[in-house]
Image 1 (tube, rainbow, N blue to C red):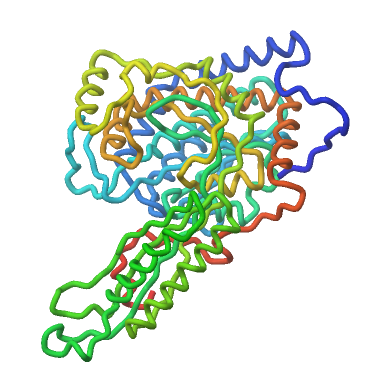
Image 2: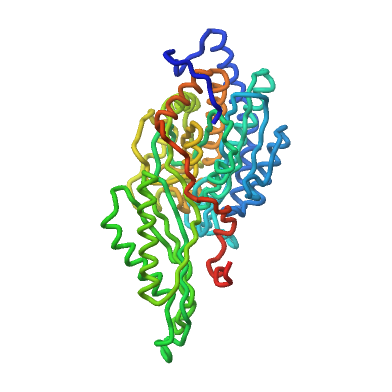
Length: 491
């Protein structure tokens, strides 16, 4: 984070320009970036939907990343590809000097959530993944905002740098963690991001720290009926570990989350599995507490291996620190989101939404709520995790949501894939791009806002804070979405 000269004892105004002339300049700038985004609405919508069509999963987003990089290069950005040892990660930059305002862009899809642009369940033939978290919109919308800000910087002669970070594999791959670890945010003043949702809002909240690992058990194969005494089942090791982990749930601190999926468990009932794998997530708001819980889980795995006569090793796949909120930035961002507004549906979109809502098994918000923007609130800890958390530990960071999905749609669902593949998603993305760009103008023109955000950031972290990555010194897990059966070869 850029070191700033902060004057002790001087009251810092969070908002408001210092003169009427400056206010007019800011208003003009915000109007310009809104007009820029609006004039290219169709282009940015097409870009987002191309990425939706590709539905590339974490660290495999080769074409999706290339599309965003191409758009940024054509707009005049300098682009560094393959940063932090990740082929699909990139940094695009334009401008000169400080302040440096970063914007995050994601673009990975989720496996197992193939879905057509239809309001009923209809997987796409030949497609195994889907944008069930809306990262196709995230990437394209952030790109639109960065380009709008660049054009405004050029036209106005304002000093400063806008930098877009192409960050792969947010879904369990923790792509941003490796960019942070490599120091790519060290000179940034503020980072902005957003996320698709089923509502609009800029309230601030914390999120859970998260550490994941694949536990791999190896045993001895034998005929399950003719020679069971000669076998040592790797699947028994996995099941014994899972049983102990489920007992552990009763004796962990509040707000802990432990969940798993068996990724390999054998191939035939009459062949005792000599390899089995289980993939665990462990979450907690406090990173130190999380480390202790994870160590207890490792002990359970070791005990399971000993008790079943198997061997066990594990690989940490990803880790993300909790999210550090920032009220000063949140309130500035909220003002812009309130000005931009929510998402209004056409008659056709209302019919789509009404049909989609029939698939929900709970009462949902009215369709009209997509046009509303929630009042600013300060929440507690949201029970989810994001690799944005690591970014927020090294630089003041703020985000918001727009209604890219039909009200009531949960993330990581086929309904989210369907909504995000329509103009409903595109409309929310355009609103997000405008809000990001307008907030960037506030930051470029109001040094006091950056100062206030920096002071708050330091206060929240505390005087003794030292950043620690939860992934240690491991290389990015570029093959973490590969089939678990490949582990049998020893990779």
